[in-house]
Image 1 (spheres, one colour):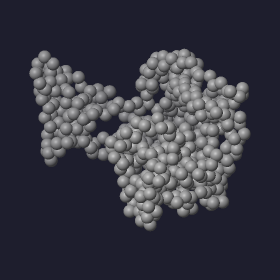
Image 2 (cartoon, rainbow, N blue to C red):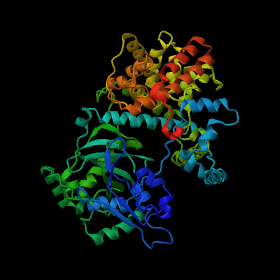
Image 3 (cartoon, one colour):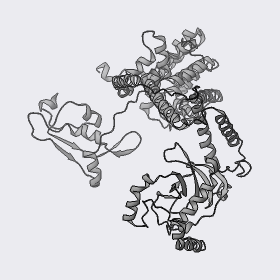
Image 4 (cartoon, one colour):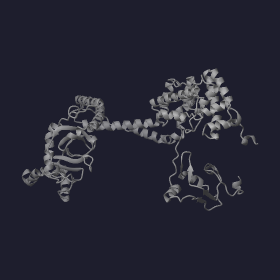
Length: 616
């Protein structure tokens, strides 16, 4: 108030106060551009700077606000200042986390479901605001007519066939990846080896021959594949463009001249076989053309695109195909491929077990499953249908449409909530906090009382009777592990009884962490135990409960006096929670023990009234 009235001219404030005070000033001075955030010394973030510097300039009084940065030690780099002044502010992200106590409390309230509470959280805000648009899109997709697949054989079994096809493809991809990693495979994948590869659209399989193996510059196989019959009408436009570009251009089609007119090419073909390839590729990949009425393409192929490795091998002119761009070389290669593709069938594939020496049991199992599916598909009436390709394409469209619908419905459902407590619910069921009908049981009601410590560890500690054999001062000392916050405190010196109690409680935390991990809760058991149990003040609290003066207990640890006081004050609240839990459990002995423990620590300077409150 005095600053706003102008009585106080200069106000020194911490970062927290400067960000929260609603009092504009003519000038804001930064003593330093670095801060300690509790973990490390770092530069101010753009958002922090904007929040504090924004106080400069009084509305209606100052035309501009002045911001001064003190450079005591060194002048900041220009890039650092630019990032500070005009950098992107830190994105506001929700830190909301669904806890077990929260789930249990919500399950006890019939009027409010867990899903309803999650929908109202900031974490789900962006997902929930798009619901109207998603509902509109869902209605539009539901109104779209679906094409009916009419089977010409009178038996609409394309759905079954397509399901087998998808499953076979899944097995094939796994087996192909496994085969390509076998060291024996590389011995077979040499230039001249016939392979079956995927088409670019993934809808068809093409027969091809390996022209060049992967190298340091080109990490993929270079393969010549047959792409299908070519008609003269289809080639006509390309012929003229090829003539315009010249015979050496890599993007046109060409026609092989009659045999009598290509004697020079034949001589060149025979002589080029003796030439050693330099490894140079003079064509631009992919390279398309036509020979002997058959279209072909030379392109790069990745391992995952190779469907099968054939037993057949042909002689190729690598120099003529890749360096000299010989028409005769292409013609002879295409003719040999056509000859190998008899009756429209590909040459037999190498046996993965006998030829390629596949030995892994899982891989062999998938290999046999793939072969069995192919055999079943061949027996299906759809296999020889002339409309199979068309119907498969229609089935693919229908499946894509159905998957999009299912995904949209899922996004609009409660199951899509980012923090939907499915896994946490499974954990609570296994340790009997709730039953199969989501009714909170006795252990769940006890866990609802635990707020100062981790609810699962605290509850299991009570139900395992870990405090029963301990004296009140020993029990409250062990309980300090729930509320002490500092991780790197000095190691306390414990009595054998306290050491055993510490180990038992830590083992309980580890087992709970392992349980959560089994149910796919993202928890590391060791880290879970370390984060929720800190035993640094066990000795200090034990001595305090026995009546040791405050000055003496401060000598037992390197923890600051303020943190000791704070821990003991919070520990009194923990005693109250354990006492309420004992009442729910019907454990009168524990109830009395917690009362004695609370009275033992509630003394002297730790619980002295604050001067700010007493007015002294």
